[in-house]
Picture 1: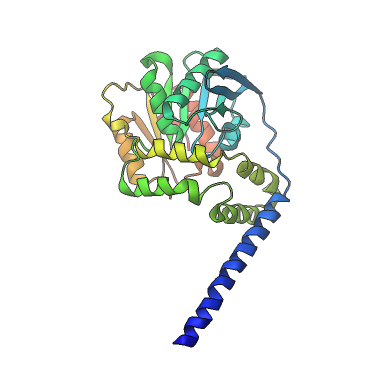
Picture 2 (picture 1 turned 90 degrees about the horizontal axis):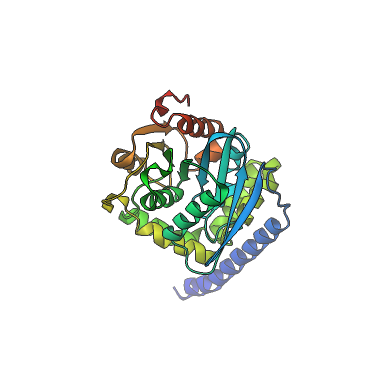
Length: 305
């Protein structure tokens, strides 16, 4: 028994040292990779606020305009570039406070995010755009709609998201996410390597998407906002025509929660057989859905997916 303890006492530090060595080696390999964003149309604009600076990408095109709101840990460009390069419509894709090029000097909140969306829309001079939110962008959009007048938007598209994040499983998942999926966490490093191995020709873009993730404190603050979000409690929320895009194979947000949210708030539901990263998995279908709903928010069932 004493020999076994001695062997374990020697093996555990050795295993830990080897794991640390492999981690440092993986980080060095990733740091050496070329980082390059895709070539995106439009211009990047910014406006100053009392709490920082709002940045958004503006692409001129057909009407009605579309406002794209990214999810947790993403940016306007990294979340929506497949739609930005495909869409014919005028697009405003915003970096939420503390994300991407947007600067913040206080904790992130959905109220602050809603303020930034309305300010960017006003700065861009858009009239009654379609509001689209993916993942965390769904709650951010719903908070925006709570603040806005009912006729401020043509419609609302919620994509791979839920109207409530207060179930125990969701709370645990979201609370751990900033640490498990932080910029330099072992899980993030492993996922980055796995993506590069699957698509080596896309290494510069993939590395860029990881490089533009927000700082951990912003991830912590946004995760806290998600954990207490439950739009079912809101008595005075009035939505424009709403379409809920359910991702059937989603490993982040349960399909049942997405469907229940659609039942609470959506006029129409469209299902796609994808995982949570629906914009990257099915960019053509997502773009068609968004553009069709922008033109006819009352009849999205005509969309061919």
